[in-house]
Image (tube, rainbow, N blue to C red; front, side, top):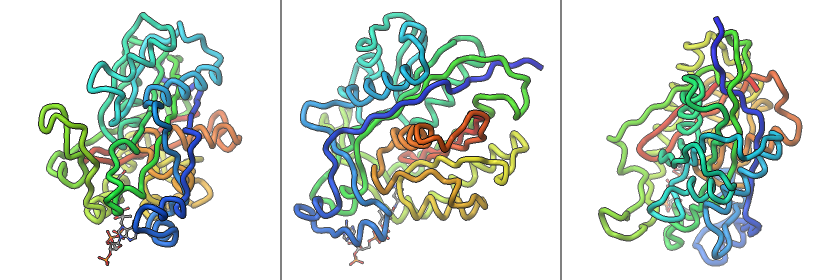
Length: 325
Ligand code: UT7
């Protein structure tokens, strides 16, 4: 049976220049390199410069992805930017990126699922492509979490960083089986009962301010591995693919201990796991496309490889995407 598949034909990423090590952070925050490394695996993160916005990061990543794909921006008919740190309350950051790319056809909108945003955006773009509503989609994850960190709260401010990643998806005919290139299945979930465990304590409708990130870290940690492995199991059941068949596991980069525990529970060996949390920190919706692009550029991920993405974040939201590169 012939089906339409969303094939990733290019990827790109962008990190702000300013790289802050744990030791540098420890000069102003009551923390230490040892504590941060041991609990999270993070060694450094990038922070956007003053006047550098989420749309700037997203635009640079999008440009790189289009160049990598060899695709003209005018061919793009759908842009989804996953972000929890938009430039403004509205319009959508994706519209600013669309404008800077010189595109004024098709549609651009933002996706808000915090750290799961890229997986939610990819899953949405895939549905547009599958039903023939879009042919070429740009999916971006872009964040400036440094703007919503309370640097008086050492339990959260050491964990996050800024950055952006993007992919270009194109519709291609497939056979309808797991040998096809492109997205093979996606599974997204949310459960608002957990909304107070990871949230921002402000917003236009409540405090009329932006607010700061608040997290019950232990509670998030407690749920993370189970939720992540559940949606990956859903992807295995939907396709018949097994953990052994995977070539690469590109997880959301929140904490090395969560990544290791999830991979262990699923039986995915360390060598197949793409890890960037040590150098990027948790960049929320940008973390998967940042990690992905690194593994694509250094030649680890090759055409035909079977790749699993997963993410979990505020809401809670969580999800997985299985694809053949
Ligand atoms: O994208 C999804 C979002 N987030 C996550 O996935 C994060 C999930 N959670 C975690 O990764 C972990 O819970 C953390 C890394 C946030 C915290 O690790 P933990 O092992 O749960 O530490 P804790 O919160 O239990 O804190 C242990 C101790 C406390 O001191 P006492 O009370 O034992 O004396 C904290 O005050 O560590 C102290 N502490 C710190 N010390 C130095 C907390 N933050 C820091 C810090 N530096 N930055």
